[in-house]
Image 1 (cartoon, rainbow, N blue to C red):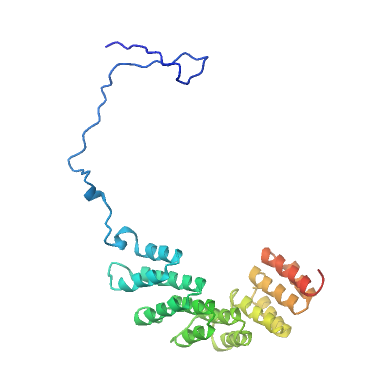
Image 2: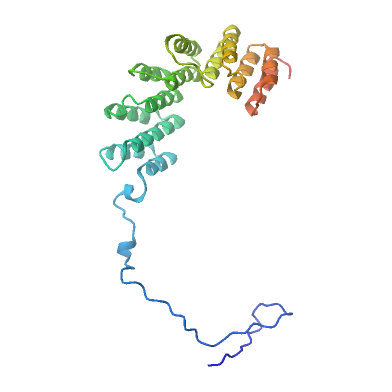
Length: 279
């Protein structure tokens, strides 16, 4: 059959300086093949299973979603009910518990946090796990209960630097500065662990809270010997400590020698000037 040109109606949009398009009435020989016999379009087979949350999304992702939405009781219940599921690996279950503890601390939900703690004690494989117990120490400190943090720390057979750091931080965060210093002294004198760029800012904060510039200078000297004084977090803590204790020249000296500065660095310096009546 021959092609026939059809002029489109005036309502069609095309440029006036171009000839109107032509449309062919010739039939196309292209056909849509029928579906293969193995395919089924039954809605019963294409629907996702609704009787198992775990089939709809991975275990850890489901716990994370519940925690991010603030639904901690349901996340805890899901963990407990699924504790015997052999298809979930121990590392994945451990990560899920860790996520729940982190959110408990952030939301200051110590009630759910205690229940998670009890569950960890019941699961013998996690009872002495360093990561989960460090999360427990931090969770209790964020919830304002550093005594529980200490109880977790003391209940372990062994500990590591991360747990010591969490303990020093727990005391400093809750303004128990003497206890923070005592924990730091214990770390230095009773263990083979070496303080790091996380430990020092915590104990410097304690020195600042105690207005003990003498102890602060000792920690500063330790930071120099350990080549940690160039760390931005250590530097920020030193600037804040010297400024709060009234030694503004020392604060300026530390600030000027910092190889890296951030917003906290500048705020600490400004606060030091303000606290010493220079703003």
